[in-house]
Image 1 (cartoon, rainbow, N blue to C red):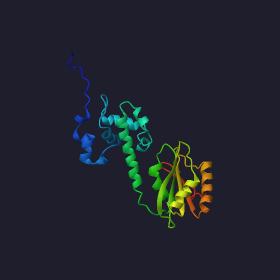
Image 2: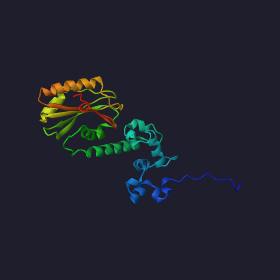
Image 3: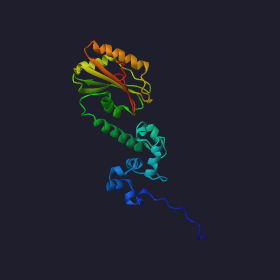
Image 4: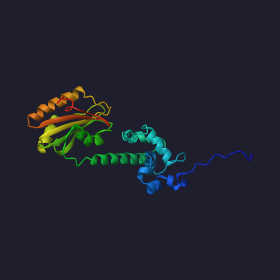
Length: 236
């Protein structure tokens, strides 16, 4: 053998990395803020495969979402398991972690009691609705001081719509002794422009609520980064 022939460089396993470069050890030494998104995902999936470390596999997972965690949150278990090296267990771990993150963000606003503007409503609902792949319709119930009494999911639908029953909304409002209602739903497309059906349901809901001495204060369309307020636009 020619002594000058170079042998292929052996690929280090994650266990052979320097301690400060291994995700778990790095977290312990430097804290969670020191880890990249890929490193955090690597901790979730624990191991890679014979060709990739856990971090390399995590980078490939992020790549299908444009390296955007919010976009990754929209992926299903089926989407993830299409990736080579991602089985059901790894996919479930990732989905569960992203859902916990969404719920944590939502919980930050659970103690908000008074609604002063449309942005307050957006802050309450965006964590729950902003990155959903299907449409959901919710209501926020308020007392006479615009303080939040409760919020309720009315329906879940598909990519472009969901069924809304005005009678169900009024029943919930009356049972909770609410004097104000705010409607809220998401547009998975990212387009905040209200549809003709959105406009119709707003008009019908306002009229029906008024007959019960309940005020329809707003109807909001939520996306991941923006919102449309019927009240702000003078449409209610």
